[in-house]
Image 1 (tube, rainbow, N blue to C red):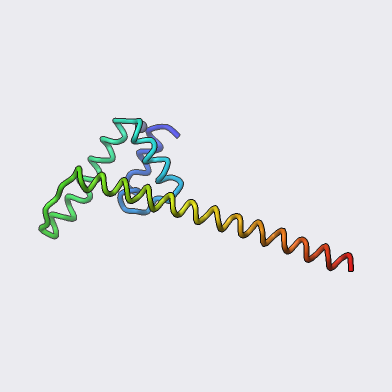
Image 2 (tube, rainbow, N blue to C red):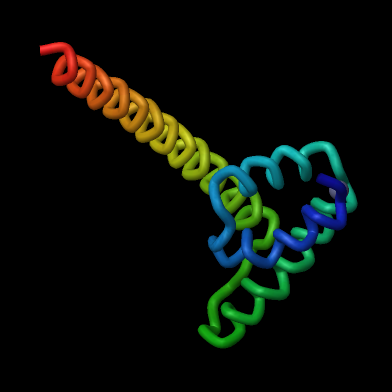
Length: 107
Ligand SMILES: [Zn+2]
């Protein structure tokens, strides 16, 4: 994926609508790409800033941005682990089904 593709995912990331795999990729990318990180911060500021203005709350961009990145990474890694467990369980289910079919054919 190049920077342009990562940047198309930024809006979905900010709205928590990006899937776990893409979220992890985006966060890893912004660790190494200052331009995409800046773009993400700007869009985060605009999106969150507008929400806060409507609610009349205060806003600490750097702190909330760091929290958003940390929480998204934690959640996405947990979701990926969960999906891996589901994949293993499905594979195990298929193996068990095949074994039952083979036993049924043999006896
Ligand atoms: Zn980039």
